[in-house]
Length: 323
Length: 222
Image 1: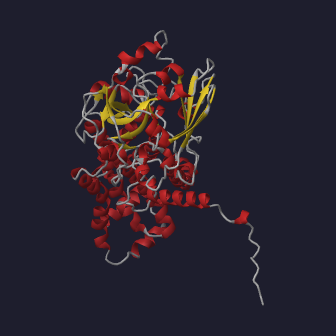
Image 2 (image 1 turned 90 degrees about the horizontal axis):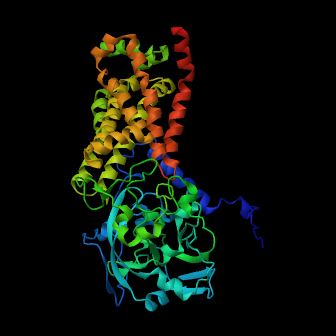
Image 3 (image 1 turned 30 degrees about the horizontal axis):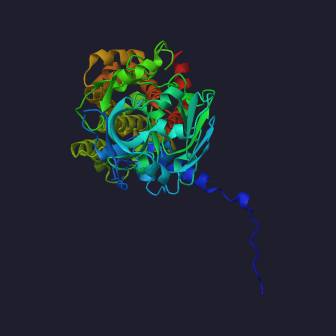
């Protein structure tokens, strides 16, 4: 009997899946950007078509919080199809499309670092173990657009206290999941994965700082950072890290992804401040998502309108330096 | 027909190869020009149609801005690709589309500017003026539009004849405008430089092709 042996192609010679996928992606973009008559295919930068995002499971026992702005919440369709979530692609409509098959169960969050009781928590324990409140917050992106979002969640402080941070804990660092197989945007090093963010301890313990588990009364849709994300309403959106897997108490200021990439553009504090421009654009005004073509611009408020609650944390700091 | 042939002689010093090419016109070519015209209008029609149907996504202004900007840059590069195409194929007829495509580049660039001015900035001059002066990427984009304006205005046959040699010199501004257009795009991107870099590479290729020709022109002028 003749048994045909494998022709000597070693596994190292086979092009890695991520490599050829990237190559394909690149060629497709080159064709779009180039001379090809791509008249009817939206490129990454265009708004593009909108496919509805599946609704999550309703969250039980939601308590209405007193933290509610009196603006009309942005439409569900807009909140879930206009996202900066590079883990699922660069264009704003990409996360809605590319996160459709993202599975968020099981999901564990590890809490570690300068604390007496480090440990892990499952997302089910979080949903069941903390009173879930609905809070309607303004959300201001560093790109000068904004939304009003009815989050569901609970104060970050409630979770942090359980792990008993020590006196050395001066900062809290967060990390997003790193898994390029499940988060296809991570196959390219657009950012230094995993996405990292951090808060000063007093900011993390502030009653406005929320760990969000849902929006519009339902579990978080994937493009919005399922199953658990941070929401810091007085800071630019990039501080509100999505799909968290690690929380770490630290003594020194932890590295943050955007801050490391361009420190003069994205500060560690990133407090919403109409007086301090982004080096490339003004932060004085913002566009309300959902206003349509003729909505114009609206004045941006200091600390995104939460100055009364949070400004005291920064008294004595020159906010044109500590951006 | 005769007029336009003379026109190209005056403006581009048609090589013997290209002159031969003119006799080898593809059949049914009278249909080409209106067809190309409509094809170039398609992206604009699509954007307007999507806007009208509220189908531009959550941020329709951004979609219009990016859509018109992308096409302005694409048409600029297509226009700059016609001379190389003529040389490679030996067909002179490419150049018959140069004015139309160039004007389309201006059309999309102007549309891009108007979307920014009227919809994005909503005519708020207190931010528009400082933005043009202070924001490098806006300064650069605005300059590109300013440079393209005289080119669009002098694109008529009459202006070509009236300006003569100076017309050619003036229209070399298109290279500067294209470079500024690419820089404008590169400068506004946050992290993913791939798309603007593709435009940069194409432009660099088109300019490298021109290097020996530009040098020749300079020597002749000296």
